[in-house]
Length: 194
Image 1 (cartoon, one colour):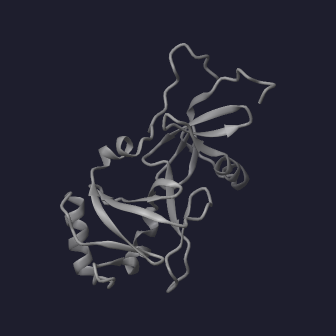
Image 2: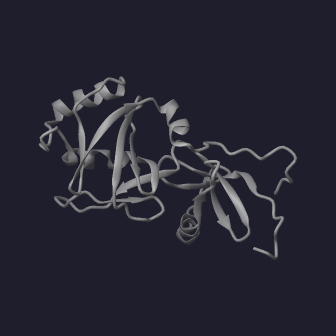
């Protein structure tokens, strides 16, 4: 890094979609090794901007929604296990929300992220009432509707031994509440990297 102290940062090239796929200028990166390399070097700065550290250069990431995408990695009838789109496992779910668009958000030790839309139905056995009992689908549907309307509802997520209350949240409030920048912008006067 000391060799190249003034390498300009890159803005507007790399993005992360809601399914945890990396895109360069809107095209999905299909090469698994390149995706894994980006994932291993994905971090954030103190301003809440997420980036890919490529040697001495930071490539700032535009986010479709949250900076992380969580996947369910547990087998059927096993305790719930989660991992980030980066491949890192989740040890703790601290909080959970359902937004007005029906997206489930989790705050873990890794940060805020959404649950991949293809995994939502896999979560049903882990959505419980205050007593830890799984909910019938018709009852669950009504509770999810109430949360999407930003009304309180009795719903918890069972993760290991914890029962995490699921709250309602407006999607527009998510970036500000969790301190991340959806579209990092090149600072005025900074050299542009092409």
